[in-house]
Amino acid sequence: MAIGLFKFMFKPGIAAFWGSTSIIRSISSVHHVASRARDPTFEKYMDHYKNLVKVIAIHDLILANPNKTPPCVSIDFLSRLSQKLHLNRGAPSFLRKYPHIFVKFHDPTKSTPFCKLTDKVFEVSQLEADAIKESLPLVVERLVRILSMSKSKSLPLRAIFKVWRELGLPDDFEESVIARNLELFSLCDGNEPNTHVLKLIPSYPSGHFTAAVEDWRVLECCNEDTKVDRMDIRYSFKQGFPPGMRLRKSFKQKVKEWQKLPYIGPYEEFWDKRRSKIGMQALEKRAVAIVHEFMSLTVEKMVEVEKISHFRKWFGIDLNIRDLFLDYPGIFYLSTKGKRHTVFLREAYERGRLINPNPVYEARMKLLHLVMMERRGMLTVPPKMVNEAAVMQDEVAFAANL
Image 1 (spheres, rainbow, N blue to C red):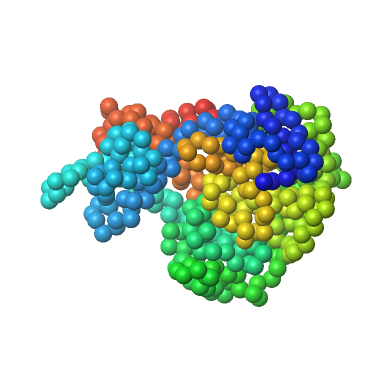
Image 2 (cartoon, rainbow, N blue to C red):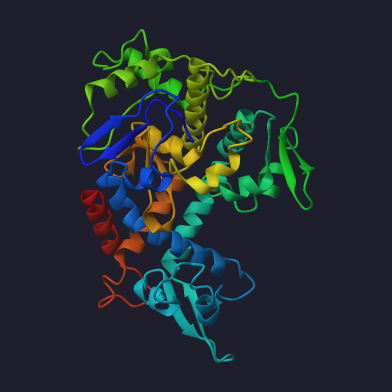
């Protein structure tokens, strides 16, 4: 478990600091998750996003059948996958809930009903594909940065497959990114059968990148109203705690001490594993810096804990990733909505939206808006069309509700 400076038990409105690194957490990991301070803005966002995840799963299954005109899947097939897709009331009920996204139709040559995407969803999918294509140089840099944070400058390909959408990679990234940039990447066989490892070429210069947190530090140094001591900002991270979370004076002092603690950055070479108290704290702060940088590289500044945990060993993190997120609530926010643990980079969001959105994110939000519409507008709009005005009104309502 993580040993960090933010080990505390969450009670309603109370944050009690757990103390030194020699104290073992006396509550279960499940209780640690359940007793965390809630942030209503992120929780409300996840109320909608958990349904988007299910929609995307069906969306991808449909588009995986390009040889069919139009691309489609049988509803019987989706029904057999209902449990795996977490469609609690079954596939037909779920599809009926989102008529702006899915259309049920019958193939005259077959007896079973099928499901396809609406024209509007095809437009949104094309917008996202175009945005990813236009951002390919940035995508290549993201992949190089991720590899640069690895101790061996290599990562298992299956781990990258886990987060290809989060990193904004095209679905054919093996061909469009890796194979077309052999001056940067090499793909090798792994130690286990049928596994591959993606490596950064040995000649690539080390220490080439600076972490995203450095941008914030520069801005804070230039900000006359900064709340961070300019003498301590060199190792500080932006903090923003959940609303209503009362912070004790002793806790604030521990945060201040942690902000001053020196550490080695995510792109710097690091092999020392000191076991002193200060050494362990510095190791943990480096782990915070690595996952902070990883999340800064994602399109939506959010990722499932299960997915990022596949990188833990390769990044040299000897801590439980989920506990790490829970121990630093001023930097990360963990939600358990939708039967999965999803973590957000707090500083990247304001009122439930990215402060600095990108084209890929904007395209994905259009699909989320269609999810939020559910059946609204279907009394006056034909099933195969989406009222553009209704979508725009819903976007306004979405922003206002967060």
